[in-house]
Length: 264
Length: 272
Image (cartoon, rainbow over all chains, first blue to last red; front, side, top):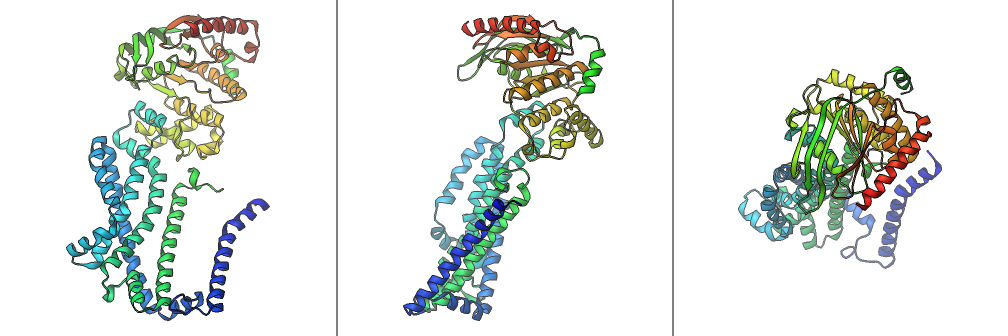
């Protein structure tokens, strides 16, 4: 490895870490220096202590949020991909259905969530449905775009060799769509988490199936700000973990051939 | 490819023979936008001919080739392949292959898989297909790169993969649409020489599109000069030079004379 590339790797990984540590240190210093009460802004250390102390409660909520997020994400991916495949079967079908997919996308989930929660008895199922509604659009639009983004030269080649519809789909359209699909996954995974959290805020129900959003809501009412921050940290970490998992997946699938995944 | 050239040196010179492989009768093409790409064109290409369509940019050369490949239908007139309709293409001894302006490779597939594509689409059994792929890659000198991805190859090598893909079906009619237009002059001369050698070794008919006079003279048995859009045939020049053709031909008086003649025709074609 050349010195330049190892230096650039260092910059890529070390620089954000240094920034993060510096901000946390400054935060800690300011809170201590100005003696800010922890029910207004807790210090990073206080948040960390709370995270450990309340782990029984927060860990359970994390599991609930994570489960709903993953189920919603999986449903969005499967359903969204199927819808995209239906869309590309005919322009006519896409033209008549796509506006409704957009409709779903532009309507704020906060506005739909109360209805879904009323209609669906099981709260966890209701929240998952809300998250699916939020997360499905990038999958539909990206996969549709990808399935259509076929090199016209290759399309000609397939046509010249009298490829069947199925051969064209499997050997040409699906691989062409892969980079778009993985781009969609990246956006959608984050949206699934956001969908679950927002919907739970609206639902506001607790009990044993309480997710992280409920802990934030409750901690706010109780002015337990360190716990609010701790729950917030867990949500953020979950989002980052999902994003990194998608990046890794894309690299695994596209690594050798696609520009977006080549080592820079 | 050198051994092939040596074998060729002993082979007798080829001549056009037999019934037309492809025949255009009063073929016209007008696009929906109203652009008239081709004026009525009559053209017949016989077996074992290497015919180059030479013309100014936008004269409908590529359009003509797309019609010949069955990718577009003519607005008027009739095309015949081996004396029959397009459905005859693909029967034994009537295979057609095309090489495009770009290499047009699947970026997600390795070189071997790219070359194998036409066989896969025709559902050729894997062992036979793999043998044909190995032979085709050998032909273009890319056997060591079978497991590479297209983006790991240079432009010239990608084009050779594209040519291997065309040869893997052992075509009887090969359509080439300015295949080396995007390459540098040295690579282009090399690939021209390789193509001329390849053509000599098999019972292959080639329709080749280019706007390079030098390429046309070096490769062809016959050059068809097309006018500016809408394209029509303004002249035909037979290049009666024996094969194999080498760099010695490029440097000869005869080469220069052919180029001068075609240059004059092309200039008048562009004005017409």
